[in-house]
Length: 499
Image 1 (cartoon, rainbow, N blue to C red):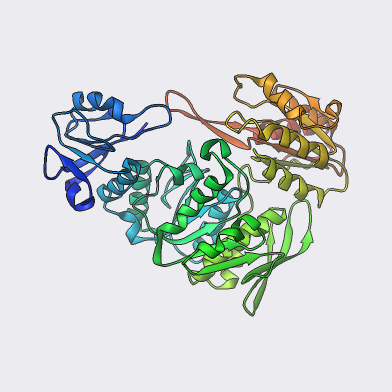
Image 2: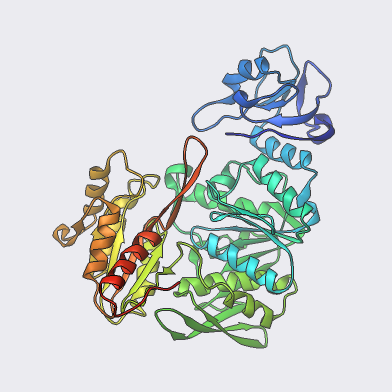
């Protein structure tokens, strides 16, 4: 659903897109635009977008009947109102929305974060570092939208252009000096960020993902690299030197690059010196300076995210001690190796790992801090490609001592087929425990846990769902696990539940 965006004062489309071909008028002037024909209002400029499920070019009559004053399209249309033809209406839509909002991003330092894994965590860490430096920060991420005074849940990682422009305007109005934007490959491919220029572009890592959406791994990588094309002349890139996929695009970058890493030589590095089930300590090294960082989030992948965030902070003028303080201030991130603490003598972690790579990373992190068994509850989200399923089964069979295969909180169209696809990845399918109902699977896994074990509940984390009525609800692995642990604590008062 595309909201209408409007402002006081008329905009000249000829000035914004001089290369456009105009039919029915030498110019189109407008005060509002809309990308959804069914939501057009009188006077709107209708932007015809070829979408996933419908083509806006086939809905022009609906827009005209609802009062659209003009249309911007990718081909001429048989209408009596003016039409501007451009090569890519998605690109144009982004530029138009930013212009109507007053180009709010120009008043802020804008950081874009993309990559296969770690986008959300890195975005939160960057915001925390900037906050520690007394900057006012707005954030757009999977976890929600914040204009520094108010936070709202999100239905998708990156908002569509009108929503993006409105949130950036709110940030600017509230005095934000920085905006941190988490950018999905879908958003980059659909040009949701058109009209924006970035001061910093962060690539966390580049693995195999979303091949179903982009057609090939090569197309996926090219899509991610689009972010670097939107850097300001003074902008810089942050690249993970430990990640081969990220390293592959280094020669193609024209902007200054800051490299970070734990294994490969880089400008900003880290060395983990202490690991525990609930925290880890690493040395953060930049130039001739070294500071210890103690974080309550575990795993080498989290250290990599910390390094990327630190690079942004340092280049933006934050001193290393303040960077460390900002990293340490992030005690937990919902659904990102989030520890459930009720005083139990085994670890329970919630992670939204929904692809084979993320699942392997999470299990590896737990193996390093677990004296006993690693138990994994996992499912196969319906939005993921079918060929991910056997790979996830293979990962769990090899990396966990006990695998519990289940469905999602939201019923799937073909749950049994999904479960069988996962079993195809097992060398010994009899080792897998199948419990289709997610709540029951989580409770059963917790019942099996013994002192010294770790239980990973993977695949959904804190899943946000927007109903057809527009209401937002959270389907929460964390609450399911915590509720069971709390009830067990009441029945066996050998430990107490606390936040």
